[in-house]
Image (cartoon, rainbow, N blue to C red; front, side, top):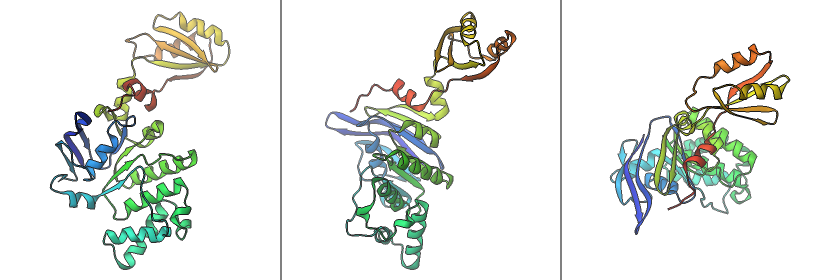
Length: 308
């Protein structure tokens, strides 16, 4: 659905985007992660045919950004980080205005506007002025606008930017709903744990260069250099810690909030034997699991906070 080949954008001697190579298949939800100024918005603007690259190629649904801009705009929905609204319009009027721009006419136009309002849970605000909406509602209205023509591909630039916790949860639920509808989504965000929850692929970009690109699980494996276990027992926690420290496969044992954080020595990838040894030595095991690395940890591990 989306392919880029050595996509590059320069401003003078500065690379805003440096030889970007991406591939998104139908139904992919791709989390595009990077610090401010890393090149995320530049990429989306190029894919939306709003900005020309310095060189390189990109295709969306098989159409080239150079020769198929009209076709691309028919199959994508682009939602920028900040977008303007018309102050004197009601919510339903705002959507009908854009639906008419997509040449949706007659009864079909009102029907589609009502449907997208229901999808983004704004039906109860259909007759409210756009200026009366909160930031979260405005973001959902912007997303509704991008869905009017039923695009195959969604380019969402920081859709959760500036939202309060409840609004972020609502936006995440909405993105999951769009994923279930089979939409191909490229979404950028700084809310990293929430991206991991909805995306099947991620890319980490810094200073215009793509550092990591792949399945979420594969990226996590790449970042993980050591295996860390969370272990707990019913009682005799100090004795259990001493016992684990004596095991040749264990490098360190720390306690955090009543849980033993056990780091295995490099090269140890199988650890089921530890559970057996704990039980054999008379401890009642209540917790035994591998400590999961999250997307935020991966991001901090792989980037340096440098912008173009």
